[in-house]
Image (cartoon, rainbow, N blue to C red; front, side):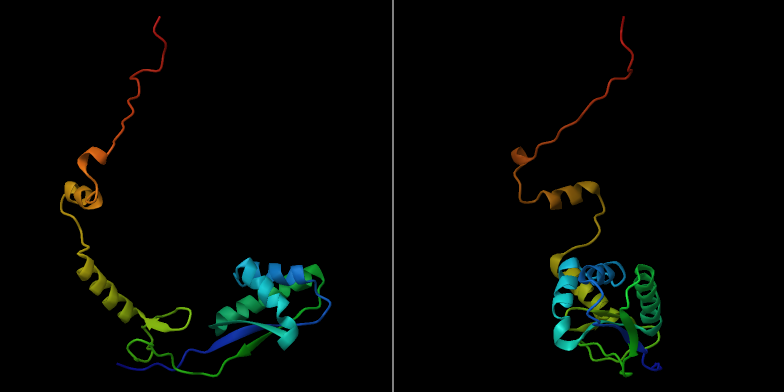
Length: 171
């Protein structure tokens, strides 16, 4: 197995300028950077401490595309908001579960605090399937029995609707 060079990542930084309206910055964070509105408002409220809002990390090409979109939006509205792209130091991504470093074919998924590789996700999904007995049903009645396992037969109610064969009035 060949270890590929680390993926270059970057973050997009919005610099506080005291003239761009807060509502515009919130809208920009929501529309361009896909932040939740509550999170965007919190970031804008705290911009006074550091003088900047950092978005990312993103793969370098994604960060550049977000930078272009955000800059175009600010320019179109006539705001002097300064937006820059900062390349992050190159570090090899490693799975926080198995410790394996990334390769050209291995994808990583970021949780709130940890990275997990797709191999660990597959292995854990297989373990969960084995523990819960989940699997494919051969016959539909097996799926129905499993789905309604905690109900007595008199608790299950069905309904059918029969449509008339014709829709014209009888004379």
